[in-house]
Length: 220
Length: 336
Picture 1 (cartoon, rainbow over the protein chains, first blue to last red):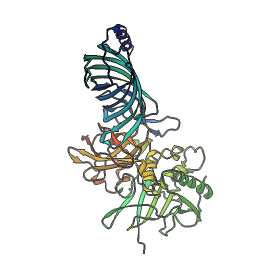
Picture 2 (cartoon, each protein chain N blue to C red; picture 1 turned 180 degrees about the vertical axis):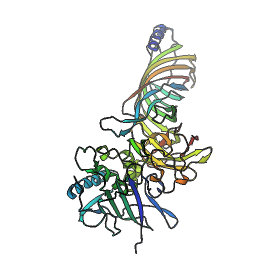
Picture 3 (cartoon, chains in turn purple, cyan; picture 1 turned 60 degrees about the vertical axis):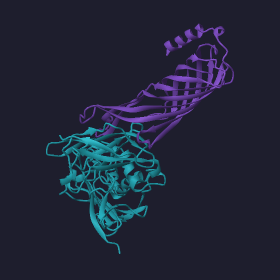
Picture 4 (tube, each protein chain N blue to C red; picture 1 turned 45 degrees about the vertical axis):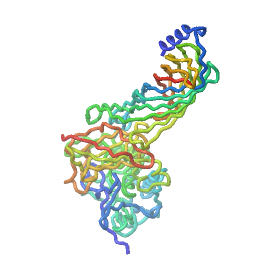
């Protein structure tokens, strides 16, 4: 993450606004793919009561779980309030797995990993600030909050929560300055920190992860 | 006219030798066949009334016995997701073995049953499965204690009563426990996670005065309170070996969030099983043969029970939805 922020700052410094061409934009639509990091869900023992007072619990086996990294898709729609400031609405889908490594079985069952698919959907609202909004390369920072919905395997159980995100990226305009309804198009890359409050977990703690996304952007 | 038929519900201690009737469609409930269908055994009128035999044993007066049994009933009644309750109706001279329509609990000398600490005998309405009487005898051939902190070398009345009242309300045995074989063929419990495990802890131990998740799920399944079924879920599926169903496999579901271990058995010839009363969420599924106790402690006919396979974890997590059942799973096991 530190390297990312340093890179972002370098890009910001390297894009003088004076180079920019006029390109009034009202809306941006972006569609692309993403990668979302996983997180640990903790380690616990499955225990029984020992037939020996004071002997502590008897461990039947040990489970160590994680939410694996996942890939998905994302779409975002931005509305420019000023040339630098935009408000956005976005939606994403990513498929993760809940993975539990089972070890130390009391009856010597070989170590096993048990998994289930977890489909994650999120919609969010965000505010984006663009640096050098009229350049060919436009860095930006963005922060927002959204609603998280996770469907377990079989789609018979849903966990919900709130997702906060903050990060930044760069839009590289391949074509811009159009005079009609379509103003141009480009490529965008961004990275953000995602904090999940709620959603699926084995405890009530918030989970922090990273999302890296790339998208095709169209300006209108 | 009510027709009744005696059923031996359970025996408890050491290597138990006599069995319960075959569990019904669910994992640890007592049931039977009536008019070609499976009926679940349960009390229809609650609180059910019980009497205490006015016979004491060395170290335990009838009043102390009644108080210890009363605490066991109260522990079951305290299960917030179950409506079961019992009420003390008085002392009686009746035996805890008479089929007289009166539920009696008391001591009886049974030196011939040297591995049986206590047993519950249930009378049911054959047509409906309603329990009409359930006598519990405590074998006075063993040393007993009602000490609050337990007494070395003496079995704890409250702990054993908690197990037997579990049978009285309609539960069979649970297999969540580990044992080791002792010289002479007896089994010693290493640990368990169910009061309804068929083998008692060592004399002097009072750890089994507390119900576990498996016991609570069982009682709540039979006597659910208003929200129980809508707040819990189940996992069902098959246990198979080389494509064939395995009968009598013990399936344990573990919820990492709650730590709860809740179990069931494969009860169909196709290896089908249901584990109910689960907190919503993903569960680890572990299957093992019934090799930590006498098969007859769980099933009335051991001939059909397959214990010749290796314990295994399922490689998928089973998801229990809220208020229902999820996709069926197939757990494959291999021969020993």
